[in-house]
Image (cartoon, rainbow, N blue to C red; front, side, top):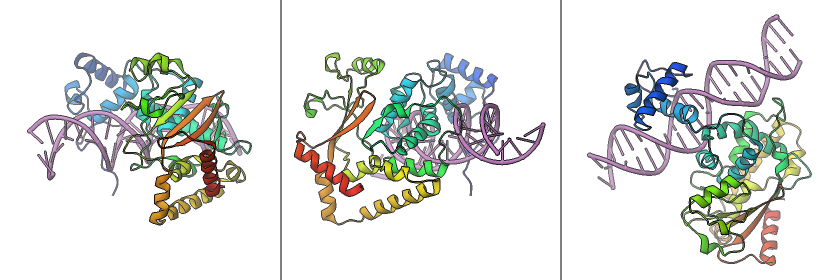
Length: 321
DNA sequence: AAGCTCATCAACCGCAGCCGT
DNA sequence: GACGGCTGCGGTTGATGAGCT
């Protein structure tokens, strides 16, 4: 059985919108405002379902949309935000004025994820230091380091947070302050981009005095825990392994092995799981500095000393290298 | 020139969450 | 609390057209 159409009513139009339909929708919303999508098509005289109208408005007709190619700065921003939020496109879009979640999602799936893949195949890079300059989107069209859909799908899955394991809400925390002083219910991020900073200050997320331009701090909330396995599953992909592979099939096989390994890990004893819990990360700091990403970890409630730092690094290495 | 491959992007679909009853 | 309707989100599909053989 195939998918049932979103509109049960027979006779509703689907597919590309015509200029006339666009005009009717714009006209109606300008007069009556957004909302009530269910009843909107009838009132606006459109043979479309409400969902379709909403999508058309949000993704294409809205007046505040920025048209044209995504800029290099926006690219960098998307990479950073995707690292923080995962595939929460609406959240990412909310930090990029004039861009829609659909646009960003398409951009990511068609360009940036491939650029990230190319980064992973570079032997000289490590998993914890990402050179942003290698993530720049090539202006050349087509046939540049393409990854098959299956591989892309699997790779995306390996870096995605599952529904029951959502990424942490983010709170801006200047690096020289203790995390607890800055916990709020807001979700945001500090970057080195001016319009982001202005937005954060405007929303009272932070004060202008608190800005630390090169730092992002991701702060957990009560309902979420990143344990080391989960986090590393997303981050620790051995670039040397990937780069030694010659074709998509080899990569697919390698990814399948990782998946199998992860399934086994989930079947571990209670004691092992408690150990993971003990090592759960309540804060994660990410530094964006001079085109490099660096990750730092800290344990709940206290600052990370060198010994703990080494312990975490060896845990990482023991597990994944 | 024709056919094929593949990138891009608009649009669709299912589902989860919210809200009113 | 249960239920149903509406909305928004994220995954996916399919049309289109550019580039390649």
